Length: 68
Image (cartoon, rainbow, N blue to C red; front, side, top):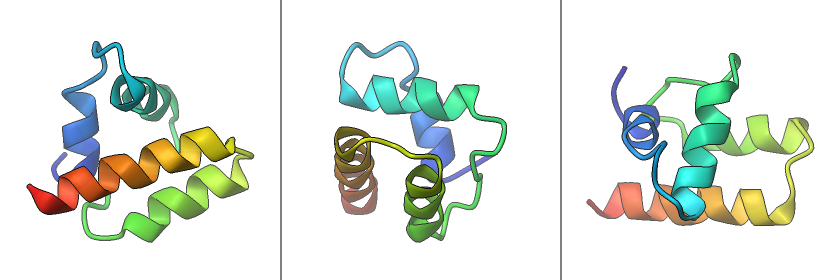
């Protein structure tokens, strides 16, 4: 595992929005491990009925990931 999903996996104990997203991803057997396709994560959450807050948390996490 590498990329964005690996980054999330390292934050599952965080008590913030990144941790919330990380726990959601860790519990989701269909979560993608493709590090190069951010739209895959967005589409997956949208098709799963994610809240606007969750989608915003994803966007924020992806921006932080891209800027590192």
